Length: 301
Ligand code: PRT
Ligand code: ZN
Image 1 (spheres, rainbow, N blue to C red):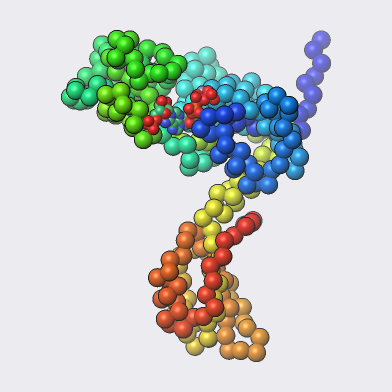
Image 2: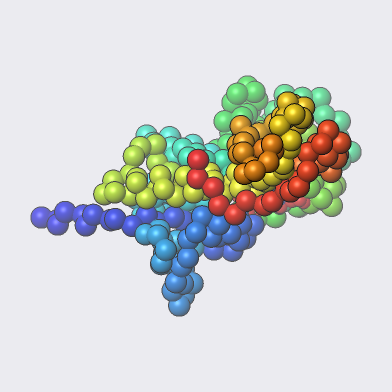
C-alpha cells in the first residue's frame, strides 16, 4: 500500500533559473517582501520571510512541474503555457490558467517569410514548411485559418531554417524584430501576444497553500500598483478649496484634514502615475501651497 502523500504546507513557485524572465521574476517576488536562502546548487531557494520556496528551472519545464503538482505556481511566458496546454489537451489533461498577467517579458509569436516575398494572406502558406519551436500553437492557428501547412519543430536557431533549406517560413518569438531582419525575414502576421504570467492550476491549492498564494498575490498586486503610485500632498485655504479639489489629478479620493489653528486644509491623495510639473504649477496658481509628491513604499488597500 502506498503511504498517503505528505501534506505540503509551503508554497512552491517555479521561476526561470537564468534567461530573460529569471531576474525580473526574482525582483518581483523580492518586492513582495520575500527573502530566501539559496541552496548550494542554486536550484532551490528556501523562503525565510514567508513559507514560499522557489524552484529555479528552465522555462520549458515550468508547466510540467505545475501540472505534476511538484510546484504550485510558476512565472513564465504565455507562449510556453499555451503550447504546453495544447499538448495536455491532446492527452485529455487540464490546461493551466493565468492567475495574473505581469505586463513584462512581452513579445509576439509571429509568422515570418523571406524579405523578397510578397504577403498576400495566410492561404499563401499552404503546402509550405514552417520552422518553429511552437508547433502546436502554430498548428492550431493554421487550422483556424483553414491552411494546410507543415510545422517543422526546431528547438533553436529557428530563424536560419529558410536559409538552410529546412523550411520555407518561420514562426518565432519577436520583440524588437532585429533577429528576423538580420536573417532577411519579415514578420507578416501575429499568432499570439505574449507576456510573463503567473500560471497555476485551474483549481484551489490544498493544505493551506491557497491562503499563502492569496497573501502572495495580494502583495504582488500591491507591488505592481506601487511601482506607479505617488502620494500628492498640499495645503489650501478653505476659501479656495473648491478650485483646488477641481484641479486634483484623477486617482483615489483625497483625504482632507483640518490644520490646527488655521483656516486651512491639508490634502493628501494617492495618484497612479507621475504628477506633472504643469499640474503642480496649476495648483500653486490657484493658491495651494506646500506641494509635495512622494514615492509610496508600501500599500495595502
Ligand atoms: O534556458 P531556458 O529554456 O529557461 O530559456 P529560453 O532560452 O528558452 O528562454 P528565454 O530566456 O530566451 O526567454 C524566456 C521567455 O521570454 C520566452 O518564453 C518569452 O515568453 C519571453 N521573450 C520575450 C522572449 C523574447 N522576448 C525574445 N525576443 N523569448 C525569446 N526571444 C528570442 C526569440 O526567440 C528570437 O530568437 O529573441 C529573438 C528575437 O528577439 P528580437 O528582439 O530580435 O525580435
Ligand atoms: Zn526554454
